[in-house]
Image (tube, rainbow, N blue to C red; front, top):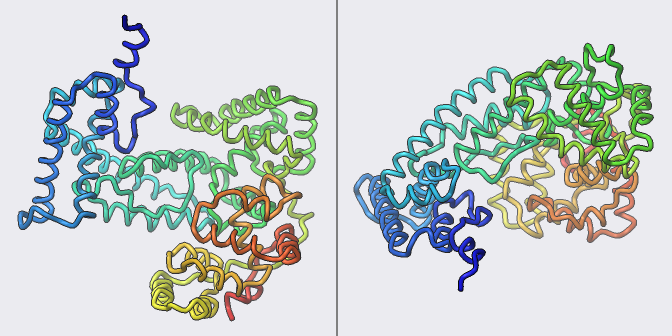
Length: 485
């Protein structure tokens, strides 16, 4: 006799098995497993999908051919599924989505989904115009390049018919709560929606106060904040929450982003002896007070701020545990700050000049020659990082380049690669310990491998520079000499 649980296993969709980026195909597979759709119906749907693909390929070739390159066919196939998924994924109940698949033609589903994609494109284009119009006046390169260059390039290149699934945008500016699982125009829309909210929050503060806080932030983490991929909203909301917590209700009429050492000591007194639960309650009250004092009333705006709480809470509790709260709360201690290394970001190349340099590098096969081109042509830290990410260096070529740098230059790269580790363990940072964490980019992986191959004495020298503050002045070429040999 069949058990009741056996029946449940065969009839209920397991949503954990559904792939967001291949929703329809994974739904058919899971629906078959659950007994909600039979093999014959699946075969019929798959045949319709292939027929639709054939018609789209003919459309792509303007009727001249029924065959294309494998890569092109794959792209058209993924684009077609993107529109089908747009229609099918709007059902809250997967079982209803399966019923819809069984009772409607694939072509009809595709047309409905394609209309949703086009509608989303129109809405997103309008949203972009609003974001650009209200762009913040902040000296963060990635922020402006994303809005002024990457997003316009996306809208210019986006093809809702044949490449609907492609994001095709090098948006370097990070969000605090980004969702990289989403693709295509739906990703761009959610990115802009979140960016708009983050901008809205940042616009509640004066430009000079934001600039001062960012400068202090750069000093604490020993980075050039203008070139580093930082999220400005995260820095502002963190300091504003703690500013509320260490201020009296009368003082909160004008919330300050900049926290004095005196106020920081008041904050330490408040959290002294509190357990994690009590600390969490304190931060929650701080968020409530912040929303109230800034008169934030829009539901989406408030929801976004509350959704940041788990991220901020985790960092706060970790900082308390490691006794480094001063690395989460950015203090306004400009008068007391001492600077040991002096450097500046330098003047970046225009896009054409940078492209010429990368093309010259790509034409070389000798690592030493590539290094010579780079060290004679690159005079800016920003250009140097862009070049590392331009896919024009491979394997041993990275080592040859890193070998041309001095300990100061290598320590500056370390501040970028190990920013989170330096941030959480500023007094006990170790390259060898931090190097155990997988890197996000190829150049970072090669950089870590290079560092770990150095002698213990050389590593100690680099770590000493990592723990040294820096001040930004005139020209990067003055101190980053290897970039200018």
